[in-house]
Length: 291
Image 1 (cartoon, rainbow, N blue to C red):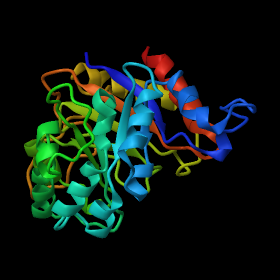
Image 2: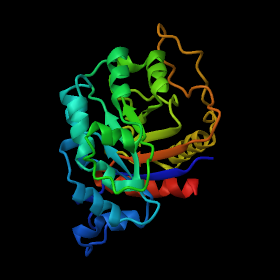
Image 3: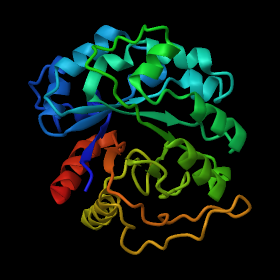
């Protein structure tokens, strides 16, 4: 069995104050409040602008041992450069201090724009550029990573796709070849819901269904997701899922889980239905089911 961590996408939301956060809680202590109740969060500020090493170091110091941050990759890579000629942007991102999180860095999330169509060659070149260890990240940035040390550590990467052209078996082949996780994203049908496992860990984003970013998850939905997460953690196929046929580039990718992996895997689950403070309560409810 792998380690399952359930958290929220971000933690700084006005809607949470007085609902999830106590009315008298200072905003500077909101991260500590989340980290005392959940073992992970997704850091979103890094998508909009490069952060500073001091910020990453502060976030790491304010959270307990064993806590993990997944960091959303810079939009200059995904939305501006659209995965093409991104060596400089990747160096800028990893040079901004991401590795200052140390062992608390869980995975790096690369969210592709909804308009970006599947191009196997572009995606393969991008995956090949991603540093897979802290040593490779240091080489990419000429040593300017903010890494606190502690020896070489592996780096995990996950890709979330949003254009329907990615619903192909070839996507699975490309990501598996590079050990990059395919994000399972529940978006109320707006974007693809893909459950094929392509790496040694799983990454799940629950954006709300049926209304994106707003809808909460009822008991039945949480039970269903708990079953899927347990299966991925154990290295088996989720209940009720039908493994697809062997991948072929000329066939659409099955929207069910791929054939069972041979080993268990760590699973990161993030609730992104942040409006009306549904995300933290749904995360707690799912974590309780998986405890």
